[in-house]
Length: 293
Image 1 (cartoon, rainbow, N blue to C red):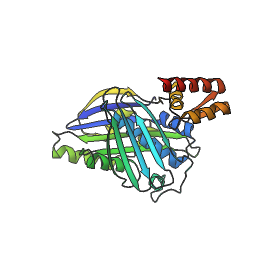
Image 2 (image 1 turned 135 degrees about the horizontal axis):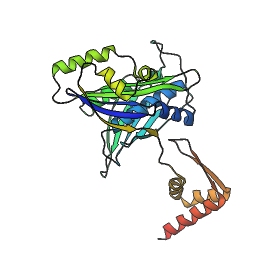
Image 3 (image 1 turned 60 degrees about the vertical axis):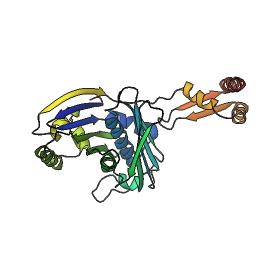
Image 4 (image 1 turned 45 degrees about the vertical axis):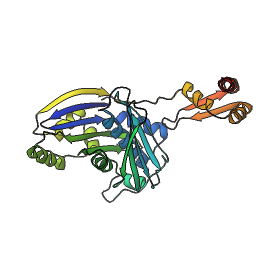
């Protein structure tokens, strides 16, 4: 089953659900994540895709968890086209299971702030933030949406990692009552949410995004809308990295030319870009031309 996201509405409720197993495995492989890092990054990337789903084309969204736990910062970028990338400062973090016998993502994140930045094409991006609640990602974003964006929501996120550090089920959902939602509708929804299993186990059982929605909204008249394929995709390229090198000072560039070799690693996807002496000299010459202009 390919990773995908489905939008739907039902009796005064809007819901987005996603299956993200493959892209989480891609991130685990690229960053060599241990289970705590894998779960934190996978949940954050899934959330970014769900929250970016209501943006317009060419817009983007970034979620950043900046806590005092051993993971450091956990960051994910997503677009409404279904592309996501992300990284964690310290991927080699593993902790004992928490009191519920689950991966201790909250212990890895710690206390701090979660921020969400929307890049909407305006001159300045729009950023909102709130304090981290428990570091388990979903509850933190539920609080963020309510406190910072005044949007009552229920967020569910899950990443299931096996002993070989492989993701065997990942996904998530965001449910939001619409303005015409009745008290009866909200009561029924809350009753459903109390009974469902974790979303990662739903995916492990073979449910796709429509199946997740059907399980969450039992007893509702569901109207399925769009389906979007999802993938881990970084915007980096050798050309973009060259532009970054061009922004260095002449002294630093000359030092690289003298070394005859440079290696630059992208934080988001861990791709390494190699530059030989000839390429570095060309970048240095271009930087000098731009200075002259």
